[in-house]
Length: 128
Image 1 (tube, one colour):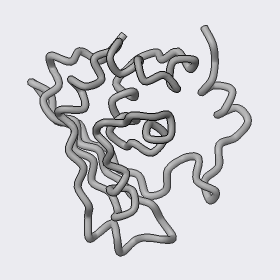
Image 2 (spheres, rainbow, N blue to C red):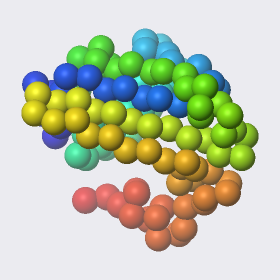
Image 3 (cartoon, helix red, strand yellow):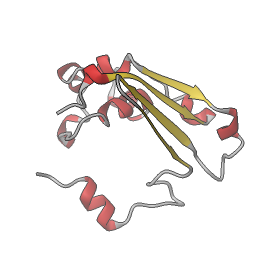
Image 4 (cartoon, rainbow, N blue to C red):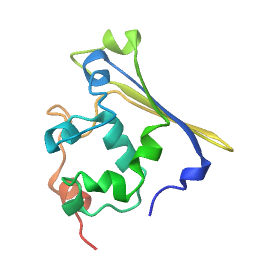
């Protein structure tokens, strides 16, 4: 189930230079997908994702990811560049028809300085 696409207007990701360069809006291979910030953000709009489909390019076509990717904007932030390499900050702004949601993180979960716990990993890959 996808977040109601018709209520999404715009998704903006503000981040540091290296992350902003992962801006492949048209991944054509598994490696492209792994390095595509727009693809990762589009997938995150789903409530549930079958982990077996993530390596499949047809996933984008089958789940209207291109409709989501069209509203994604990636911006390099000079402020965030100054905080690297000790931090890897990003801000995500989601605009809907009725509201604006914003979240910021200094050091994402999964980085070596902020690793996943065993419980985090098991929860993330939980199969229903």
